[in-house]
Image (cartoon, rainbow, N blue to C red; front, side):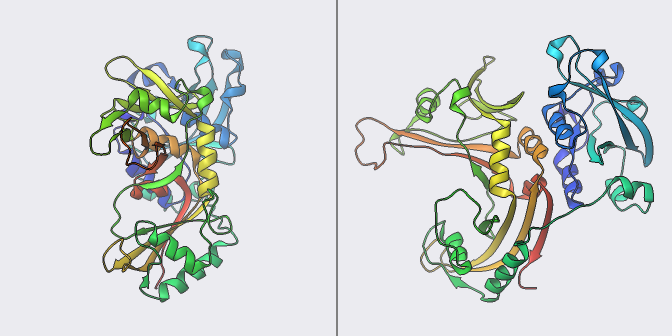
Length: 400
């Protein structure tokens, strides 16, 4: 359970991302250390499978089917060569287990353990007892061989970067449309991109996200409706009907709320990660009702489709904001790519990725609202943490 970690997880993850490292985390409990057994969380399972170290899904139950992997453990500036076992017991429905041999000598309960991979070998770093900066800047040949850096940019990224720099040289450019969308439409127009409603990336496989420099709210990653086939509620209207509240301000029944995995909101809704699903549950007291669900694989697929490679562009503005007189000077670019899928669910668990429900149905008798119903399911991330979702990121000042 990551919440018991004695070290801040998002701050630690930020260090790994500064060095373009893919990682996932474990936090052993006192019971885990004393019994030499740790539950393999969903993020750990996904990480191990993605890096071709171990696949719990294909593993049979029982000690006779236990698998062993060569492992290197970093703790207190030491490198310890050891092993890790993966197995599924006959008891407790075969819940996946993991154990790093000799871990109890080099870790205490609630220490934050980072898992990395190198050539199908497992690397475990005790972040609570190690200096990550010293580790990543080490001159030790053995360390450098284990912790490799591999960043690959797409063939079109330099082409788009040149366009961004040319646009930045123009200085302030007047918006082509008033309102929130003006900043994006103006930039795309300068790039020669025609407006469209497609969910595909904007420029030759590269997604473009523009925002005002003083924009402090969360960035939208993508929109994704629940998988109704595996949900108890079967439509957006069902969600509003069962969990929505009448709004005197808007004259319709609504859910305009952020939903998080760390606490329930004013509608008693929260997110939960369970097996291969992310659930939106209703929890008024001790009773939990599972309303709707998303397959984890579908969320990652959507993330990979939308943000395989992304240019996040910040602009300073002049004139009255969101008016027809507003102008933009596109100044800073953050270039991200190669989805680090395991971190999506880590950030979901820590509350740094959330879901916004924008759901409404018109109340009977109210005639002045054009649409009777509407919906959107926006998966968002705090701006300072979005780089943690990717295997590489670089920040470029466009007018340098």
